[in-house]
Structure formats: structure tokens, C-alpha cells
Image (tube, rainbow, N blue to C red; front, side, top):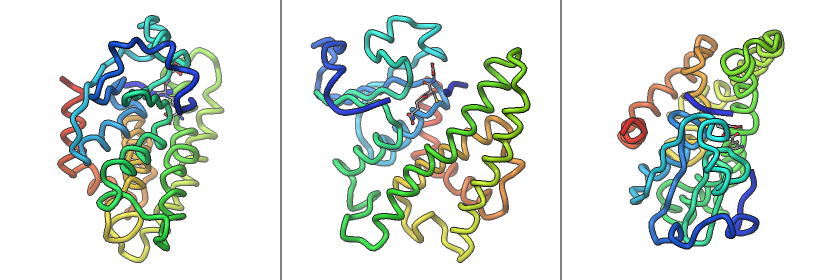
Length: 228
Ligand SMILES: N[C@@H](CCC(=O)N[C@@H](CS)C(=O)NCC(=O)O)C(=O)O
């Protein structure tokens, strides 16, 4: 399992070979890492893509990847001349370009701010603390920083209560009846929590959301695609 940016055109184009700038979207991915958000979004939208599977962490196990993405992190997405390395931004980008009315929220919609907030909450608030837990319990257990990991487990479970409160009115998804990119972003944080065995801290509505999201055909297809 793998997990721990910037985006736009510069500074990557000189690292990306001409042969890699094709019409097909290319996604660099490690199984169950944050790049899963992009993979899941590609399946929800129904886009064709090329998947490049890397060992985790690529900066250690595949140094040639640094020629593509000097940050060494995943995801990394190439779409023509556009290159991106932030998973929540990639979800927002793919949906805005290809499925805005189906999976996005329009700027004029009253829920637009909530949509963006959940998209970023999924990464900045719910995934960041788990990255510390992963690092100090799984990747670098000998550092003696287990107490930091314990603090951030509590921190994560505390922040997760915000999801439980949002679901208290019986809504099936974060923005109500409609599944959106916000559910992909937060849903990945729930996937990571499950793989880190932090899901014992899921409250009932959060657990039900996770099970609902994990049952989606596109989520299952993305899980299968990363095993190929
Ligand atoms: N905020 C970025 C974080 C990207 C990131 O740190 N990814 C992790 C995997 S989940 C990674 O590549 N870690 C490997 C490393 O830091 O060498 C995002 O949401 O995509």
C-alpha cells in the first residue's frame, strides 16, 4: 500500500518527453495511494486512460520517475500539455472538463462552496494526519515517533466527526442525494483509514457512507484496475 505538489503547465513540460504528450490521459499510480482519487474519478466519468503502476515509494524504488515528476509523489497526471500532482485538484479538473453536470457542482449552485470545501477537506484535513500515522507506524517505525502517530490517530478521528454531523439528516452523500467529486475525495480518506485499520473510529453514518461508496461500480472497477 502506498501513500505519503503543485500543478499547471510549468515547471514540468521539459521533464515530459514528447512521446508522452498524446491524446490519452496518463495516470501514474501506486495501489491505494492518493492517486486512487484520480483513478476512481476516471472510472466514474468513463474516460479512457493509460495507467502506469509504480512501486511505493517511487522515489526509492523507481528513481527514473523523478524525471517525470521531480517531487517523486503520486498521483501524477498528464493530459496533453497539462500536468498535475494534487489528487483533489485532479478530481476537480477531470469532473469540470468531462462530467460537470453529472458529478460536479456549478458555480451558481448554493452548494458550490460546500462542494469545494469537502473536496479539499478530504485531502488537507482527513488524509494529511493519516500520512503521519502511515509514516511513523509502517514506513519508519524505528524513528521512535509512535507517540506522534497516536496523536494524529486521535486528531483524524476528531476531524472525522465533521462527516458524521454532515450526514445526520439522513443524506446518502455529502451533498445530499447526489454523488459528487466531494465523495471521491473524502471517500479516499475513508479507504486509507480502512487500510491503516483506523476504521474502528468510524461512527455509524460515516461507516455507512464508506460502505455505500465502496460498493459503487466505478470504485470497484478502479480497485480492480490497480491490481492488473
Ligand atoms: N497532496 C498531495 C500529496 C501527494 C503525496 O504525498 N502522495 C504520496 C502517496 S499517497 C506519495 O507520493 N508519497 C511518496 C513520497 O513522499 O515519496 C495529493 O493529494 O496528491
